[in-house]
Amino acid sequence: MTQLKLPDIAAQNLDHSQPLDWVGMCGIALPIAFEGRTAAAKIDAGVSLVDGSSRGIHMSRLYLALESLEQVPLTPVALRRLMADFLTSHEGLSSASYIRLRFEHLLKRSALVSPLAGWKSYEVEVNARIENEMFHVELSVSVPYSSTCPCSAALARQLIQQQFQATFTAEHVDREAVLRWLGTAEGIVATPHSQRSLAKIQVRLRSNQATLPITELIDQVETSLGTAVQTAVKRADEQAFALANGQNLMFCEDAARRLHETLKQAPWSSAFKVRVEHAESLHAHDAVATSQWGWEVRCEA
Image 1 (cartoon, rainbow, N blue to C red):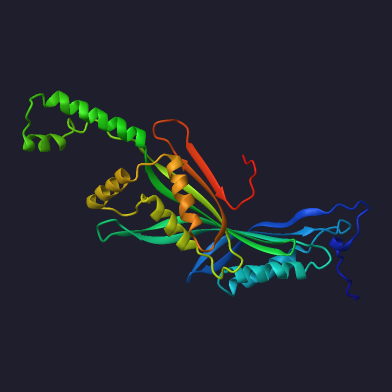
Image 2: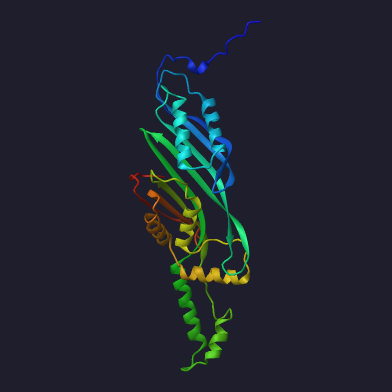
């Protein structure tokens, strides 16, 4: 029996030419290695289709090229080679290549005071592209933290002052009596409201950056804010956390400004975007602030 040649529908020409900006695949599962560990990633990979007369691209070539990420650690160099391979396998069809990786980064975090420790998961996204013969890598992380409202703290302090005046009416007060009073619910009649908050950071890495500073970026964000959410805690840790919140009162605007100044000092950052979200415990809506540096200004939803 004669072996028939398999038809290649993608190679057929079209009656109407139309280039396409992006053609590829989304949600590809792949293990990736970075910082000495392995993570399960979801990957979007694609190329432009500048030859509008071609029916389509070669999806299988993109898929097979992704296998290179299983062999080497995830670095800007590895991504650049992969992007170049995408274009080489689509010579004459494509002029730009793109990839997006999404995965969870697990870090073991120590408690503030006690010897306890626990795992925290951070959402990470890496975007790379070759476009107009230029290579770019962008790193994004989401970092949860706690925020205590400065206005609420001031109002709570005023109520405590008023309660003190109502309780201690004499001109001279007993120090021990005041100390005991401060340790009662009657003494601290009001507390400021706090909320779990989220910092979303997107950084464009410098062209000579050799590694992906994922953990370093997360550490810098948490250090800048001072109120990273905790894992396993004892009462001493909870007390230390309350102290950290009291010493880091911040509106969403304050948090965004802190992060802006921190990221401007990062040696591997050529541009960044910051978005902080405070899931208000007072309101039924969130408070949000954004900032950017080195990025072209655009209106975003």
